[in-house]
Length: 215
Length: 254
Ligand SMILES: Nc1ncnc2c1ncn2[C@@H]1O[C@H](COP(=O)(O)OP(=O)(O)O)[C@@H](O)[C@H]1O
Ligand SMILES: [Mg+2]
Image (cartoon, rainbow over all chains, first blue to last red; front, top):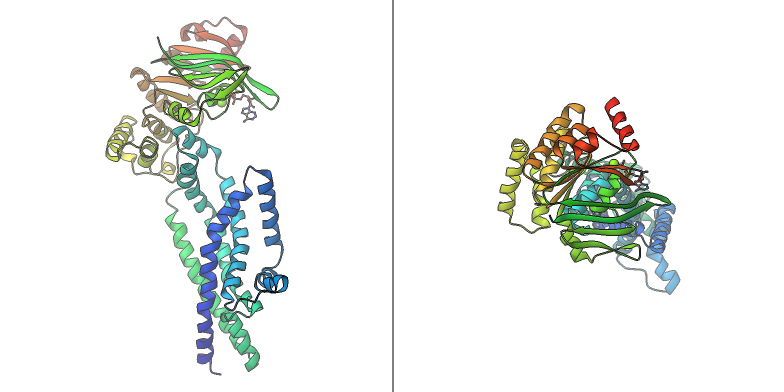
Protein backbone atom coordinates (compact mmCIF):
# COMPACT_ATOMS: atom_id res chain seq x y z
CA UNK A 1 0.00 0.00 0.00
CA UNK A 2 1.39 3.39 -0.95
CA UNK A 3 1.86 6.11 1.64
CA UNK A 4 -0.77 8.23 -0.13
CA UNK A 5 -3.45 5.55 0.18
CA UNK A 6 -2.48 5.00 3.77
CA UNK A 7 -2.82 8.67 4.64
CA UNK A 8 -6.10 8.86 2.71
CA UNK A 9 -7.59 5.88 4.54
CA UNK A 10 -6.48 7.13 7.91
CA UNK A 11 -7.68 10.61 6.99
CA UNK A 12 -11.19 9.17 6.61
CA UNK A 13 -10.94 7.89 10.17
CA UNK A 14 -9.71 11.29 11.26
CA UNK A 15 -13.24 12.65 10.84
CA UNK A 16 -14.38 10.20 13.50
CA UNK A 17 -11.46 11.13 15.71
CA UNK A 18 -12.61 14.73 15.46
CA UNK A 19 -16.18 13.68 16.22
CA UNK A 20 -15.07 12.02 19.46
CA UNK A 21 -12.94 15.03 20.32
CA UNK A 22 -15.49 17.78 19.75
CA UNK A 23 -18.51 15.91 21.08
CA UNK A 24 -16.59 14.98 24.22
CA UNK A 25 -15.72 18.63 24.85
CA UNK A 26 -19.25 19.75 24.02
CA UNK A 27 -20.72 17.48 26.69
CA UNK A 28 -17.97 17.21 29.29
CA UNK A 29 -17.22 20.91 29.75
CA UNK A 30 -20.74 21.82 30.96
CA UNK A 31 -21.26 18.44 32.67
CA UNK A 32 -18.03 19.01 34.59
CA UNK A 33 -19.44 22.28 35.96
CA UNK A 34 -22.56 20.50 37.15
CA UNK A 35 -20.44 17.82 38.80
CA UNK A 36 -18.23 20.49 40.41
CA UNK A 37 -21.28 22.24 41.86
CA UNK A 38 -22.61 18.92 43.21
CA UNK A 39 -19.18 18.18 44.64
CA UNK A 40 -19.26 21.54 46.48
CA UNK A 41 -22.87 21.06 47.61
CA UNK A 42 -23.63 21.97 51.20
CA UNK A 43 -25.72 18.80 51.41
CA UNK A 44 -23.15 16.36 52.75
CA UNK A 45 -24.58 13.22 51.11
CA UNK A 46 -24.62 14.83 47.67
CA UNK A 47 -21.04 15.99 48.02
CA UNK A 48 -19.86 12.59 49.31
CA UNK A 49 -21.53 10.62 46.54
CA UNK A 50 -20.16 12.99 43.90
CA UNK A 51 -16.71 12.74 45.42
CA UNK A 52 -16.89 8.95 45.29
CA UNK A 53 -18.04 8.90 41.67
CA UNK A 54 -15.26 11.30 40.68
CA UNK A 55 -12.66 9.15 42.42
CA UNK A 56 -13.87 6.02 40.60
CA UNK A 57 -13.81 7.79 37.24
CA UNK A 58 -10.33 9.13 37.83
CA UNK A 59 -9.03 6.01 39.53
CA UNK A 60 -9.94 3.41 36.89
CA UNK A 61 -8.63 3.15 33.31
CA UNK A 62 -10.54 5.04 30.64
CA UNK A 63 -10.19 1.89 28.54
CA UNK A 64 -12.16 -0.05 31.12
CA UNK A 65 -14.84 2.63 31.19
CA UNK A 66 -15.09 2.50 27.39
CA UNK A 67 -15.60 -1.25 27.52
CA UNK A 68 -18.11 -0.93 30.33
CA UNK A 69 -20.25 1.66 28.56
CA UNK A 70 -20.09 -0.13 25.20
CA UNK A 71 -20.60 -3.74 26.27
CA UNK A 72 -21.97 -3.35 29.81
CA UNK A 73 -25.60 -3.08 28.65
CA UNK A 74 -25.18 -6.37 26.74
CA UNK A 75 -23.64 -8.33 29.60
CA UNK A 76 -25.91 -6.84 32.27
CA UNK A 77 -29.26 -6.59 30.53
CA UNK A 78 -28.84 -8.55 27.32
CA UNK A 79 -29.30 -5.38 25.27
CA UNK A 80 -27.87 -5.20 21.76
CA UNK A 81 -24.51 -3.47 21.47
CA UNK A 82 -25.04 -0.09 19.82
CA UNK A 83 -24.51 -0.28 16.09
CA UNK A 84 -23.01 3.18 15.95
CA UNK A 85 -20.24 2.93 18.51
CA UNK A 86 -19.79 6.71 18.48
CA UNK A 87 -22.62 6.95 21.02
CA UNK A 88 -21.12 4.77 23.78
CA UNK A 89 -17.63 6.08 23.02
CA UNK A 90 -18.70 9.71 23.47
CA UNK A 91 -20.72 8.85 26.57
CA UNK A 92 -17.70 7.17 28.16
CA UNK A 93 -15.32 9.97 27.18
CA UNK A 94 -17.71 12.74 28.25
CA UNK A 95 -18.30 11.22 31.68
CA UNK A 96 -14.62 10.52 32.23
CA UNK A 97 -13.51 13.99 31.18
CA UNK A 98 -16.32 15.64 33.14
CA UNK A 99 -14.77 14.14 36.28
CA UNK A 100 -11.41 15.72 35.48
CA UNK A 101 -12.93 19.06 34.48
CA UNK A 102 -15.04 19.06 37.65
CA UNK A 103 -11.92 18.91 39.80
CA UNK A 104 -10.32 21.70 37.79
CA UNK A 105 -13.44 23.87 38.10
CA UNK A 106 -13.65 23.19 41.80
CA UNK A 107 -10.02 24.15 42.32
CA UNK A 108 -10.59 27.36 40.36
CA UNK A 109 -13.77 28.29 42.20
CA UNK A 110 -12.24 27.59 45.60
CA UNK A 111 -9.20 29.70 44.75
CA UNK A 112 -11.33 32.82 44.33
CA UNK A 113 -10.85 35.31 47.15
CA UNK A 114 -13.91 35.62 49.38
CA UNK A 115 -13.72 39.40 48.96
CA UNK A 116 -15.08 39.08 45.43
CA UNK A 117 -18.23 37.40 46.72
CA UNK A 118 -18.56 39.92 49.54
CA UNK A 119 -18.13 42.97 47.30
CA UNK A 120 -20.86 41.64 44.99
CA UNK A 121 -23.12 40.76 47.91
CA UNK A 122 -22.90 44.24 49.43
CA UNK A 123 -23.68 45.76 46.03
CA UNK A 124 -26.83 43.63 45.89
CA UNK A 125 -25.88 41.07 43.23
CA UNK A 126 -27.89 37.87 43.48
CA UNK A 127 -26.08 34.55 43.98
CA UNK A 128 -26.52 33.70 40.28
CA UNK A 129 -25.39 37.14 39.11
CA UNK A 130 -22.33 36.91 41.34
CA UNK A 131 -21.41 33.50 40.00
CA UNK A 132 -22.04 34.21 36.32
CA UNK A 133 -20.59 37.73 36.14
CA UNK A 134 -17.96 37.98 38.83
CA UNK A 135 -16.72 34.50 39.71
CA UNK A 136 -16.97 32.40 36.55
CA UNK A 137 -15.09 34.73 34.17
CA UNK A 138 -12.18 34.94 36.60
CA UNK A 139 -12.24 31.19 37.22
CA UNK A 140 -12.06 30.52 33.48
CA UNK A 141 -8.94 32.64 33.23
CA UNK A 142 -7.33 30.89 36.19
CA UNK A 143 -8.01 27.35 35.00
CA UNK A 144 -7.36 27.77 31.30
CA UNK A 145 -3.82 26.28 31.44
CA UNK A 146 -5.17 23.17 33.23
CA UNK A 147 -7.99 22.89 30.72
CA UNK A 148 -5.44 23.06 27.89
CA UNK A 149 -3.58 20.14 29.47
CA UNK A 150 -6.73 18.05 29.52
CA UNK A 151 -7.64 18.96 25.96
CA UNK A 152 -4.18 17.94 24.75
CA UNK A 153 -4.58 14.64 26.57
CA UNK A 154 -8.01 14.16 25.05
CA UNK A 155 -6.57 14.44 21.53
CA UNK A 156 -4.31 11.50 22.28
CA UNK A 157 -6.92 9.60 24.30
CA UNK A 158 -9.28 9.44 21.32
CA UNK A 159 -7.03 6.62 20.07
CA UNK A 160 -8.35 4.47 22.89
CA UNK A 161 -11.58 4.03 20.96
CA UNK A 162 -9.74 1.19 19.20
CA UNK A 163 -10.52 -0.99 22.24
CA UNK A 164 -14.16 -1.10 21.11
CA UNK A 165 -13.22 -1.24 17.43
CA UNK A 166 -14.67 2.16 16.61
CA UNK A 167 -13.30 3.05 13.18
CA UNK A 168 -11.44 6.23 14.10
CA UNK A 169 -8.03 7.05 12.78
CA UNK A 170 -5.92 5.00 15.17
CA UNK A 171 -8.10 1.91 14.82
CA UNK A 172 -7.73 2.07 11.03
CA UNK A 173 -4.00 2.69 11.34
CA UNK A 174 -3.64 -0.34 13.57
CA UNK A 175 -5.56 -2.48 11.10
CA UNK A 176 -3.37 -1.34 8.19
CA UNK A 177 -0.26 -1.92 10.28
CA UNK A 178 -1.39 -5.49 10.96
CA UNK A 179 -2.38 -6.33 7.40
CA UNK A 180 0.72 -4.73 5.84
CA UNK A 181 3.12 -5.72 8.60
CA UNK A 182 4.29 -2.12 8.58
CA UNK A 183 5.19 0.38 11.25
CA UNK A 184 4.50 3.35 8.97
CA UNK A 185 0.79 3.74 9.91
CA UNK A 186 1.82 4.40 13.51
CA UNK A 187 4.17 7.15 12.39
CA UNK A 188 1.37 8.64 10.28
CA UNK A 189 -0.98 8.49 13.27
CA UNK A 190 1.65 10.15 15.45
CA UNK A 191 1.99 12.96 12.91
CA UNK A 192 -1.80 13.45 12.84
CA UNK A 193 -2.03 13.75 16.64
CA UNK A 194 0.97 16.04 16.79
CA UNK A 195 -0.44 18.44 14.21
CA UNK A 196 -3.85 18.33 15.88
CA UNK A 197 -2.25 19.31 19.16
CA UNK A 198 -0.32 22.12 17.53
CA UNK A 199 -3.71 23.50 16.53
CA UNK A 200 -5.04 22.99 20.07
CA UNK A 201 -2.05 24.87 21.49
CA UNK A 202 -2.59 27.69 19.03
CA UNK A 203 -6.28 28.09 19.84
CA UNK A 204 -5.80 27.83 23.60
CA UNK A 205 -2.88 30.23 23.44
CA UNK A 206 -5.15 32.71 21.68
CA UNK A 207 -7.79 32.27 24.36
CA UNK A 208 -5.27 32.83 27.14
CA UNK A 209 -4.00 35.92 25.43
CA UNK A 210 -7.52 37.27 25.02
CA UNK A 211 -7.88 37.09 28.80
CA UNK A 212 -4.50 38.52 29.66
CA UNK A 213 -5.73 42.11 29.76
CA UNK A 214 -6.08 41.84 33.54
CA UNK A 215 -4.25 40.15 36.37
CA UNK B 1 -32.91 63.77 64.92
CA UNK B 2 -33.69 60.60 63.04
CA UNK B 3 -31.40 57.61 63.33
CA UNK B 4 -30.37 56.18 59.99
CA UNK B 5 -28.86 53.17 61.64
CA UNK B 6 -29.58 51.59 64.98
CA UNK B 7 -27.83 48.56 66.34
CA UNK B 8 -29.26 47.40 69.64
CA UNK B 9 -27.82 44.83 72.03
CA UNK B 10 -25.85 43.08 69.35
CA UNK B 11 -24.15 39.83 70.32
CA UNK B 12 -21.84 37.84 68.09
CA UNK B 13 -19.62 34.83 68.75
CA UNK B 14 -17.35 32.74 66.58
CA UNK B 15 -17.35 29.20 67.92
CA UNK B 16 -16.99 29.74 71.64
CA UNK B 17 -15.38 33.16 71.34
CA UNK B 18 -17.67 36.09 72.04
CA UNK B 19 -16.55 38.94 69.80
CA UNK B 20 -19.34 41.47 70.38
CA UNK B 21 -21.07 41.72 73.72
CA UNK B 22 -24.35 43.58 74.09
CA UNK B 23 -23.18 46.52 72.02
CA UNK B 24 -25.33 49.49 71.00
CA UNK B 25 -24.64 51.99 68.25
CA UNK B 26 -26.75 54.58 66.49
CA UNK B 27 -25.87 56.77 63.57
CA UNK B 28 -27.79 59.91 62.77
CA UNK B 29 -28.32 61.29 59.30
CA UNK B 30 -25.32 63.39 58.13
CA UNK B 31 -23.22 62.11 60.99
CA UNK B 32 -19.63 60.99 60.55
CA UNK B 33 -18.83 58.37 63.15
CA UNK B 34 -15.38 56.92 63.66
CA UNK B 35 -14.66 53.63 65.35
CA UNK B 36 -11.23 53.23 66.88
CA UNK B 37 -9.70 50.46 68.95
CA UNK B 38 -6.96 47.85 69.04
CA UNK B 39 -6.93 45.08 66.48
CA UNK B 40 -9.07 42.13 67.46
CA UNK B 41 -11.51 44.35 69.36
CA UNK B 42 -14.39 43.48 67.03
CA UNK B 43 -14.55 46.59 64.79
CA UNK B 44 -14.66 44.67 61.53
CA UNK B 45 -17.14 42.18 62.93
CA UNK B 46 -19.40 45.05 63.93
CA UNK B 47 -19.21 46.51 60.42
CA UNK B 48 -19.74 43.10 58.84
CA UNK B 49 -22.84 42.55 60.95
CA UNK B 50 -24.14 46.00 60.04
CA UNK B 51 -23.58 45.28 56.32
CA UNK B 52 -25.18 41.82 56.51
CA UNK B 53 -21.96 40.00 55.63
CA UNK B 54 -22.15 38.33 59.01
CA UNK B 55 -25.24 37.27 60.95
CA UNK B 56 -25.61 38.55 64.48
CA UNK B 57 -26.52 36.04 67.17
CA UNK B 58 -28.72 38.43 69.06
CA UNK B 59 -29.92 42.03 68.84
CA UNK B 60 -31.71 44.39 66.48
CA UNK B 61 -30.44 45.89 63.26
CA UNK B 62 -32.56 48.78 62.02
CA UNK B 63 -32.03 50.99 58.99
CA UNK B 64 -34.17 54.09 58.74
CA UNK B 65 -36.92 52.44 60.77
CA UNK B 66 -36.76 49.24 58.72
CA UNK B 67 -35.85 46.12 60.70
CA UNK B 68 -33.24 43.97 58.97
CA UNK B 69 -33.11 41.82 62.09
CA UNK B 70 -35.18 41.82 65.22
CA UNK B 71 -34.32 40.25 68.54
CA UNK B 72 -36.78 37.59 69.59
CA UNK B 73 -36.05 35.89 72.90
CA UNK B 74 -32.37 36.69 72.62
CA UNK B 75 -31.92 35.53 69.01
CA UNK B 76 -31.74 37.78 65.97
CA UNK B 77 -34.43 36.92 63.45
CA UNK B 78 -33.72 38.28 59.99
CA UNK B 79 -36.31 39.89 57.74
CA UNK B 80 -37.52 38.18 54.54
CA UNK B 81 -35.38 38.55 51.36
CA UNK B 82 -37.41 41.43 49.97
CA UNK B 83 -36.81 43.57 53.05
CA UNK B 84 -33.16 42.53 53.12
CA UNK B 85 -32.78 43.75 49.54
CA UNK B 86 -34.37 47.05 50.48
CA UNK B 87 -32.03 47.41 53.44
CA UNK B 88 -28.99 46.45 51.40
CA UNK B 89 -29.81 49.22 48.97
CA UNK B 90 -29.39 51.77 51.76
CA UNK B 91 -25.75 51.20 52.58
CA UNK B 92 -22.40 50.88 50.89
CA UNK B 93 -19.15 49.38 52.14
CA UNK B 94 -15.58 50.24 51.28
CA UNK B 95 -13.22 47.37 52.05
CA UNK B 96 -9.70 47.55 53.39
CA UNK B 97 -8.37 45.76 50.29
CA UNK B 98 -10.75 47.35 47.76
CA UNK B 99 -12.17 44.12 46.29
CA UNK B 100 -12.59 45.65 42.86
CA UNK B 101 -13.64 43.31 40.07
CA UNK B 102 -10.33 42.81 38.22
CA UNK B 103 -11.87 41.67 34.94
CA UNK B 104 -13.92 44.86 34.60
CA UNK B 105 -12.70 48.27 33.51
CA UNK B 106 -12.87 51.06 36.08
CA UNK B 107 -16.03 52.39 34.47
CA UNK B 108 -17.74 49.01 34.42
CA UNK B 109 -16.82 48.43 38.06
CA UNK B 110 -18.73 51.61 38.89
CA UNK B 111 -21.60 51.15 36.44
CA UNK B 112 -22.62 47.52 36.65
CA UNK B 113 -24.38 47.37 40.02
CA UNK B 114 -26.63 50.42 39.46
CA UNK B 115 -27.68 48.96 36.11
CA UNK B 116 -27.98 45.34 37.15
CA UNK B 117 -29.28 45.68 40.70
CA UNK B 118 -31.12 48.99 40.62
CA UNK B 119 -32.18 48.54 36.97
CA UNK B 120 -31.34 52.13 36.18
CA UNK B 121 -30.97 53.55 32.71
CA UNK B 122 -27.55 53.01 31.16
CA UNK B 123 -26.95 56.53 29.87
CA UNK B 124 -27.94 58.09 33.16
CA UNK B 125 -25.73 55.67 35.12
CA UNK B 126 -22.82 56.32 32.80
CA UNK B 127 -23.09 60.07 33.20
CA UNK B 128 -23.20 59.74 36.95
CA UNK B 129 -20.32 57.25 36.99
CA UNK B 130 -18.13 59.59 34.94
CA UNK B 131 -19.02 62.45 37.29
CA UNK B 132 -18.03 60.33 40.26
CA UNK B 133 -14.75 59.37 38.63
CA UNK B 134 -14.15 63.06 37.92
CA UNK B 135 -14.72 63.81 41.61
CA UNK B 136 -12.22 61.10 42.50
CA UNK B 137 -9.71 62.56 40.07
CA UNK B 138 -9.90 59.44 37.93
CA UNK B 139 -11.83 60.60 34.88
CA UNK B 140 -8.92 59.63 32.62
CA UNK B 141 -8.76 56.13 34.12
CA UNK B 142 -12.31 55.15 33.13
CA UNK B 143 -11.08 52.60 30.59
CA UNK B 144 -8.17 51.30 32.64
CA UNK B 145 -8.26 48.01 34.54
CA UNK B 146 -7.76 47.83 38.31
CA UNK B 147 -4.38 46.10 37.93
CA UNK B 148 -3.07 49.17 36.12
CA UNK B 149 -3.84 51.47 39.05
CA UNK B 150 -2.03 52.30 42.27
CA UNK B 151 -3.56 51.19 45.57
CA UNK B 152 -4.80 54.70 46.25
CA UNK B 153 -6.44 54.91 42.83
CA UNK B 154 -8.04 51.50 43.30
CA UNK B 155 -9.46 52.55 46.64
CA UNK B 156 -10.90 55.70 45.04
CA UNK B 157 -12.55 53.55 42.38
CA UNK B 158 -14.06 51.38 45.07
CA UNK B 159 -15.42 54.50 46.80
CA UNK B 160 -16.92 55.61 43.48
CA UNK B 161 -18.40 52.15 43.01
CA UNK B 162 -20.08 52.35 46.42
CA UNK B 163 -21.30 55.93 45.83
CA UNK B 164 -22.80 55.02 42.44
CA UNK B 165 -25.51 53.11 44.32
CA UNK B 166 -26.50 56.36 46.09
CA UNK B 167 -26.29 54.84 49.57
CA UNK B 168 -27.80 56.66 52.53
CA UNK B 169 -24.89 55.52 54.65
CA UNK B 170 -21.37 54.48 53.77
CA UNK B 171 -19.14 52.20 55.83
CA UNK B 172 -15.35 52.14 55.63
CA UNK B 173 -13.29 49.34 57.16
CA UNK B 174 -9.76 50.70 57.55
CA UNK B 175 -9.77 52.22 54.06
CA UNK B 176 -6.11 53.23 54.21
CA UNK B 177 -4.56 50.26 56.01
CA UNK B 178 -3.62 48.39 52.83
CA UNK B 179 -1.96 51.46 51.32
CA UNK B 180 1.60 52.72 51.39
CA UNK B 181 1.83 55.60 53.88
CA UNK B 182 2.31 58.18 51.13
CA UNK B 183 -1.01 57.15 49.55
CA UNK B 184 -3.22 57.37 52.64
CA UNK B 185 -3.53 61.14 52.27
CA UNK B 186 -5.42 61.00 48.98
CA UNK B 187 -8.04 58.65 50.43
CA UNK B 188 -8.46 60.68 53.61
CA UNK B 189 -8.93 63.78 51.43
CA UNK B 190 -11.72 62.06 49.49
CA UNK B 191 -13.48 61.02 52.71
CA UNK B 192 -13.08 64.52 54.09
CA UNK B 193 -14.73 65.83 50.91
CA UNK B 194 -17.65 63.45 51.42
CA UNK B 195 -17.98 64.61 55.03
CA UNK B 196 -18.23 68.21 53.83
CA UNK B 197 -21.07 67.12 51.53
CA UNK B 198 -22.82 65.69 54.59
CA UNK B 199 -22.50 62.05 53.59
CA UNK B 200 -23.43 59.81 56.49
CA UNK B 201 -20.42 57.63 57.24
CA UNK B 202 -19.11 55.06 59.70
CA UNK B 203 -15.34 54.78 59.50
CA UNK B 204 -13.11 52.23 61.20
CA UNK B 205 -9.69 53.83 61.25
CA UNK B 206 -6.30 53.91 62.88
CA UNK B 207 -5.70 57.51 61.78
CA UNK B 208 -6.33 59.34 65.05
CA UNK B 209 -5.78 62.86 63.75
CA UNK B 210 -8.16 62.18 60.90
CA UNK B 211 -10.80 60.72 63.23
CA UNK B 212 -10.57 63.77 65.47
CA UNK B 213 -10.78 66.29 62.64
CA UNK B 214 -13.39 64.72 60.43
CA UNK B 215 -15.84 62.88 62.64
CA UNK B 216 -18.67 64.24 64.76
CA UNK B 217 -18.59 61.27 67.05
CA UNK B 218 -16.03 58.69 67.98
CA UNK B 219 -16.40 55.26 69.52
CA UNK B 220 -13.53 53.46 71.22
CA UNK B 221 -13.97 49.68 71.23
CA UNK B 222 -12.03 47.08 73.12
CA UNK B 223 -12.82 43.43 73.77
CA UNK B 224 -16.15 43.55 71.97
CA UNK B 225 -17.63 46.42 73.95
CA UNK B 226 -17.67 50.19 73.64
CA UNK B 227 -15.36 51.49 76.34
CA UNK B 228 -15.71 55.19 75.68
CA UNK B 229 -17.61 57.32 73.18
CA UNK B 230 -18.51 60.89 72.48
CA UNK B 231 -17.16 64.06 70.93
CA UNK B 232 -13.86 63.24 69.18
CA UNK B 233 -12.02 66.09 70.86
CA UNK B 234 -13.02 64.74 74.28
CA UNK B 235 -12.36 61.08 73.58
CA UNK B 236 -9.13 61.48 71.63
CA UNK B 237 -7.60 64.47 73.41
CA UNK B 238 -8.99 63.91 76.90
CA UNK B 239 -9.82 60.24 77.34
CA UNK B 240 -11.06 59.27 80.78
CA UNK B 241 -10.91 55.48 80.72
CA UNK B 242 -7.67 53.69 81.45
CA UNK B 243 -7.95 51.43 78.36
CA UNK B 244 -8.55 54.40 76.08
CA UNK B 245 -5.61 56.28 77.55
CA UNK B 246 -3.31 53.30 77.02
CA UNK B 247 -4.52 52.66 73.49
CA UNK B 248 -4.03 56.28 72.45
CA UNK B 249 -0.59 56.39 74.04
CA UNK B 250 0.41 53.29 72.08
CA UNK B 251 -0.92 54.84 68.86
CA UNK B 252 1.14 57.99 69.44
CA UNK B 253 4.29 55.98 70.09
CA UNK B 254 4.07 54.21 66.73
N1 LIG C 1 -14.77 34.51 60.65
C1 LIG C 1 -14.20 34.44 61.88
N2 LIG C 1 -14.06 33.24 62.48
C2 LIG C 1 -13.51 33.16 63.72
N3 LIG C 1 -13.07 34.19 64.41
C3 LIG C 1 -13.19 35.42 63.86
C4 LIG C 1 -13.76 35.59 62.56
N4 LIG C 1 -13.74 36.92 62.28
C5 LIG C 1 -13.19 37.54 63.34
N5 LIG C 1 -12.85 36.64 64.31
C6 LIG C 1 -12.26 36.96 65.61
O1 LIG C 1 -13.04 37.97 66.20
C7 LIG C 1 -12.23 38.90 66.88
C8 LIG C 1 -12.52 40.30 66.39
O2 LIG C 1 -12.04 40.40 65.06
P1 LIG C 1 -12.29 41.70 64.17
O3 LIG C 1 -13.72 42.05 64.21
O4 LIG C 1 -11.68 41.43 62.86
O5 LIG C 1 -11.46 42.79 64.97
P2 LIG C 1 -10.86 44.16 64.47
O6 LIG C 1 -11.48 44.51 63.16
O7 LIG C 1 -11.20 45.13 65.55
O8 LIG C 1 -9.39 43.98 64.37
C9 LIG C 1 -10.80 38.46 66.69
O9 LIG C 1 -10.41 37.72 67.83
C10 LIG C 1 -10.88 37.56 65.49
O10 LIG C 1 -9.90 36.56 65.54
MG1 LIG D 1 -10.56 44.85 61.27
